[in-house]
Amino acid sequence: MKNAVTVDASVFVNAFSSDENGSDESMNFLSQLSKDRVSLIQPTLFLPEVAASIARKQDDTDAALELERELKDFLNITLVDLDEDIADFASEIAAKHRLRGSDSVYAAVALRFGTELISLDKEQLERLPKVLPVRKPG
Image 1 (cartoon, rainbow, N blue to C red):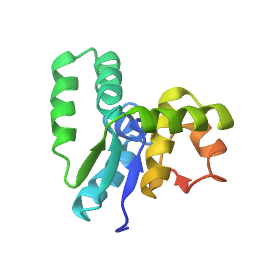
Image 2: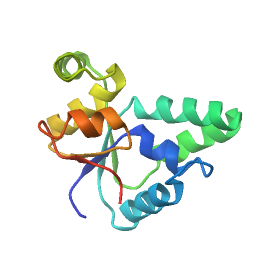
Image 3: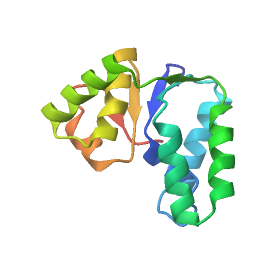
């Protein structure tokens, strides 16, 4: 895998939640992305999504914020601001495909930058394949 990808927060949260099914597979996938120097094109939204989820699941603010700092240093990551243009595009995707707002932001970034969307989110996996390449990690 050498092409840029967009990775939904669900994959990061799963990777860093060792008690969840598939955690090892998600962690191995992220490690392989780093090893292969694959570019990630991510909405800035993914940082607070991952930090919030990890803080809640692990009841550990410090661990969540440390992970957020590490994610910003992830090799070959480009963060895309949620500006008005991306927000409008995400709104259109959300309405057309009946997605939650945050899920539509990942889809908008993937479509805008021509990346494959990697996700564990059931709705993204079911509702987006006709619109963009989307799959589970692995």
